[in-house]
Length: 388
Ligand code: PHE
Image 1 (cartoon, rainbow, N blue to C red):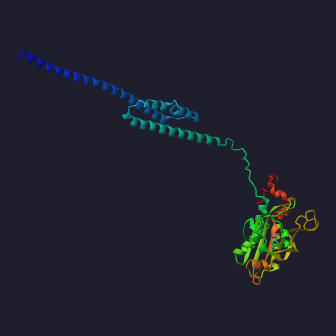
Image 2: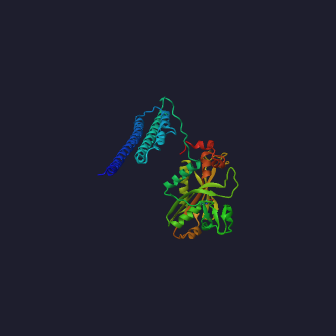
Image 3: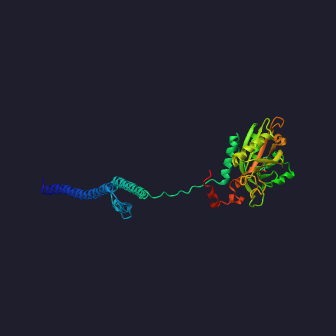
């Protein structure tokens, strides 16, 4: 081999050796740098995990004495500059491949902390409420509960319904806004008949007329439409009349009307039923008398007076010296009314009666002014507390 060639081969070899050395060193260095960075990152993440674990055991061990302790703890952990907030800040620098696991750990920490704090708060609040309701002095007199009472109109209504229920009457109800037929026409008040003036009403619409009912006789008409005789109903309800308000009249008041239809019902049956009613309501000594009267829907008709329960019939201020108090109207159902309601007057007869509840209550309780029933003055209403 010539010198020149040998030299050439040497150079060639050197080139390869340097290549290999270079390669080895660069890789090593690279590996070293990578290893160092990995170690730092590992420490950083381990550190975060440790912090999370520490907080979790702190939360579990926390035993507050007051609600204020819980609040302070909440601020420490969950507050704006709290421990969780700090960890979230650190979380921003966590490399992408570890974000998932650490994120889950942080979320878990947040849920555990929130739940524990809420439970502790609730427990302490309940305990506080229990303490507040503890009676420290067992001999202390009880506090008086304010119990409401029934309105006198309801008391008297219930009593009247009870009396007639014992005679076999059932209660019927109907609308307060009625048509002309049920309030007037079906009850033998033809249009333009002067008897309509007895009950001036409030019209809601005209032609066809829609009115506020002036009496609960409209419920009796509705009962006759629905039911075949025998009929025995009592109809309590609110009624309306166009009347000036005074101590003895109001544009709203309450009525109870009754209707009894069957075969062979006589005036004597009516008289005996009403006497029984008066004795039940006003006492065994009560007597009734009947004076002839007029209603379009009954024939014959009568006003019923009861002996004055204040003076026992001798005459006093309440009965204006007569010994009698007017309590209701009544009569035998007019055959025209039966016919209007498809009941054969040759087969059936009946009686009807109607009374104002305010008036009966005034007599029963000695109330001098009817307006008191509508004013809701507790000084008046309190006086009926003992009644049922
Ligand atoms: N409906 C009559 C009224 O309100 C009362 C009454 C009823 C009279 C039944 C007789 C028979 O004035």
